[in-house]
Image (cartoon, rainbow, N blue to C red; front, side, top):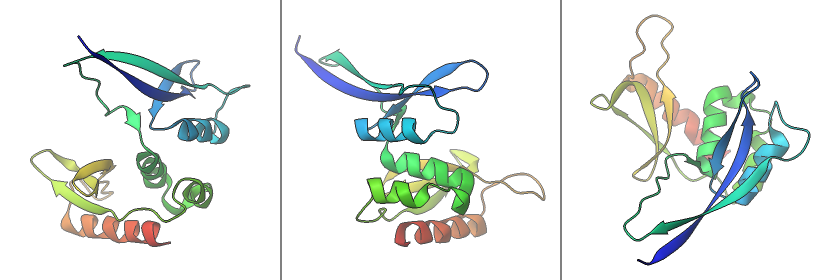
Length: 155
């Protein structure tokens, strides 16, 4: 059977409790950037590359591989405008600007999240936090997040 080689890049994360785990990245540059800028890092770089041979008909999922856009959004969604490395990251990985994003709700899939979309692909999820009660995604919340994302992509 024919085989294909797939290259996967990773950055080892510090779990904070003595544990460590790999975060899979879409590029070597992103894995290196993550290592150079993590809060609880290591004494030396802990990034690398895996080469996997997949036989024809085999499947390797990509849900665990963090793309540059996913990395940006996950950090930005956690900290919003307070992510101090935002401008540096955008300059390194999106010198021509962050691509346009939209937000959709899908109550059949999950009432508690907004889905950040790049075209037809879900690139991030944002929890629909509501301090006054149950956290359910609303049209007002969707519109507010989409407006905030416009500032991120245009700024």
